[in-house]
Image (tube, rainbow, N blue to C red):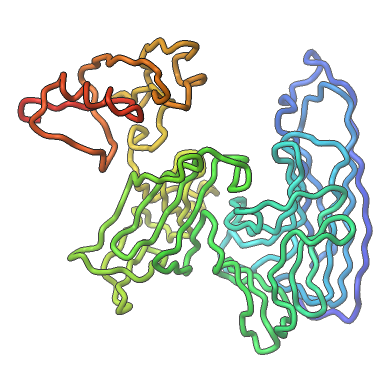
Length: 439
């Protein structure tokens, strides 16, 4: 697209209304996930709206207002200083609401392409405002991954005249910024790698999303030792008091997956990859064939290979399972598929079952039938305080059970009875595993 000699100012409103629909006269799905999606095509100056079919139990009205002020003409991959876009926030909360304005897009030789979007999402009774990057339909970066910016009335993205990229709410309140004022920034650009970058007149990068990894590592991206990817449970983040979260950490001696406890301020490693010969590692890089691991002399010392003929596009840490995967795009199916997973079976996952559950050989969960006061099987009401504070307990023996826990304290040359007593004497101990014979 060539440069334009005009500036465009566009204001558009959309009102969506729906009356009562009874189950007898509608085949639409229930209103559990009402979504609103808008796509901005700057090349054609067209805004597309898509609303999935819904079964509505009561009347509702959503008003979405999008305001564009393009101070400079631009191509689809760039946003220039002076640019501002506004998404209106619904007056009433609707669970599952999503409003996105796709602003800039890479021009890939082969699909899918990267797109940057301003987003408003309904989360835990509030509306969050964030800048996001997508590869096809997969979100690969978000400004609100670690700390959400909640707003009302409106969500504004602005690239100021002095080069600071900001998210703002009512009365000009700034909820997120890059802090690049006075550094000569001229434009925001989405690179073909998916890296969102602020650049100056000489194309020097002053800020980039690659320096702020979330739960995804993209093709061509590198992560240094002592950095990590972090994945929070769905609809939770560090500010939402999630009880636990996952992390993929690059340490000098290994790569490791952790489950982290917010309440106990502790973490447990449930998978690791050690480089050969105890060589210190310095950084990792994702290429089309696998994850390359480099020493502190910048020499490649190992590779975790992909198992797909299609080139890799990204590495992701799952927020539901905590599994680490390498993903390739299938042109035939039009979806991303895992070509490698760190944990192969359900029972290997750190939270495969609920408390007091057992993962069976069929990769399903079975509950230990234990009566603990008002507790229910499955752990929905298990007392999180453990057995401390004078709570009486006794040991129940289960045969044929193993454990995937690593690094637990051990004692040797003890009987089964002594093993049980050792656990009972420690109020933080919930179970003890005893091996006998040649085990």
